[in-house]
Length: 109
Image (cartoon, rainbow, N blue to C red; front, side):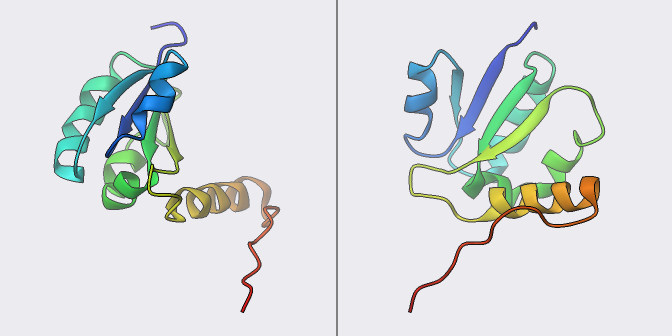
């Protein structure tokens, strides 16, 4: 298990990770991704999940929050960032540090 990494991605988002040597698994929806996450958790130390899928399976990901491994991280999907991963990171940094240290995107009108 030492240092093994995987990604669960919707669409073709996993291709970039596969090129970097990370094991890639495809799931079209959260119903496919949930059991896959549970299976991969026994073998991998770091599991990336595209934020489109992660937003639909927050409770499944939260089950690993208190564990040393696997570390489950949200990354933008091939369609672009949906914002879920950034908000999740913001919540955890606020909980750990007691304040929001991440910059917020400015909206141009």
